[in-house]
Image (cartoon, rainbow, N blue to C red; front, side):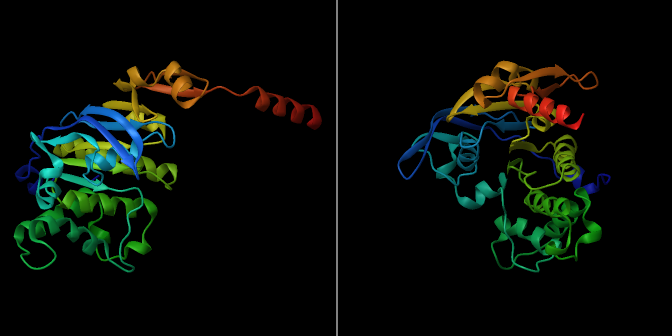
Length: 288
């Protein structure tokens, strides 16, 4: 990862009070999340986990003001986020959706400049602060040498870093990400999560991400929330959340949980099913 620049010292992320207070969320009148509360710790990395359809992404959309609660409120700096001007929210909370789209042929640099729109709108007003913010985002994500490359021409990991760079250029204190490692090979998954960890450690960016991979969530998160049928099933440190009972009750998975001796973090080891064991034994008998 690249070294810090003077822009890092000049731009310090200030903590914003950010929480969900008893929010209920629905689509077309169908309630998905009945009652959810969460206080997001400033300057930490958090992971929201849970089985498919449990409400993870729905909660993230509410935090990003893309979905208005039917009850309760998402509070940003003491005010309901739905009462704040869109541009003000965009300078405090950044969002990387699960499958972001960009115009065909757009360069990485042009994509990242879009992170400055909340400060000026779509036209005019470009200044030295904007240039520094974009240069910093390119440098921090290791993309300075690829600035003029088309987004369509780079690897999946580089493409995801470009989207994170856009959010970084937005200079928000809080960064929300919905499945940032989706469709990426394992090496690129680690690359992206290392980048988010770096931004958190070096600049104090508060990170909240939805993740499917429990082992990666436990490795990178300071805190975790497990959701089951729209309700919080467990929350706390990775060691407190990733337990054998939670894996069984929430994910329907029989697994053992051990501790990584190097990191002290939990490691999940799924148990082989009886049917799988039988298949292996039958294959071994046939092969012999």
